[in-house]
Length: 434
Image (cartoon, rainbow, N blue to C red; front, side, top):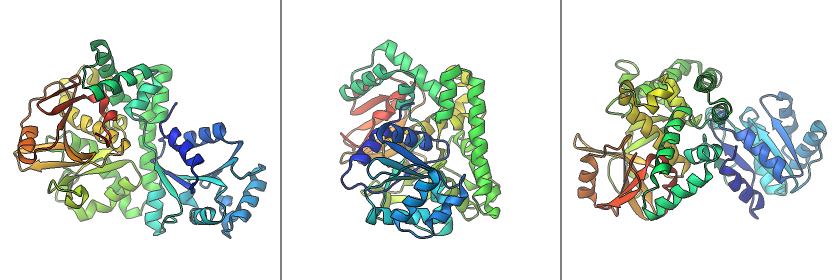
């Protein structure tokens, strides 16, 4: 399946200032697949090293001279390692801290060797061991689950992608048959999500029960990681918090509440568990803004946040939704529908590279997302249907007078009263440009 990060990997390969690349991302988002595909397509050969499966590889880093490391790996793998023409892959590098340190020397002494390092729990491992990346000596990229645009690519809807992009720029409505098709595919994406193995299962069989089995396998692997790569005292707390994320998204007030995890609990009890989930890349926080001022990050609350899962399909699976619940708007699903929709938008905005926050004004108003687009601070209201009646956006506009506002819903494209209407299927178009 095609991934948008592939073009960024090409840019890295061709860069004159290329440094070793660290590709980060949660388990099973497709890091190993895409890097090996990139290597086989763009290089004469690939040398793949997995430090979790091949424990003995750590011995090759007893000294950190790149030429010595290359000689040992080349002999062990029975492959010639050629400058500029071989891609060296260090997978699960968190299992070998010395290999992580070696990236500094590859940058300084052997920049003609092309090295990509990956680790599903790299952030967790580095934080736990109090090691650090070779600062300034590596380049970073993040890989996330497939976003909705990549889902459309996987389902052979490239023409639809181009039509959506054109309508986003022109504000013109998408033709009704295409609009209806895009909404249908969006609803399927809410159920399937973007984990590559799940999308592959969906494409192969269109069997939603098999989709659910694949999703459960990934959830099980996440819980397994919580037990293997965590402090013993934090394991039950981390599992409890993760299980609670989608539960809280079903509430009217989606601010994350510690008391909803366990009666009487406080932030201090669960803050390490929340940090672990974020470092592992399987959940992320959306902080509240105390003030609408630049820089936004300096004006965020340190205590108030919403919590989302890294994949909307896993979020659906965690609540045991059926595809019919989403497609036919089962009335028992409606309480959760708003939270699931927000989870989808949040994930897509992260893929888009948009740093987002939310804002409230007591019980008077709430704006789901606040971000900068170009020079402007833009409010984004999210509706899970075509019912767009809400006073929150009006309150915000009257108070802060933004250059324009965005309303995301099932309604078609348009621009009225300085509010840009963006269909839910077109969130991948919202990026840091005017």
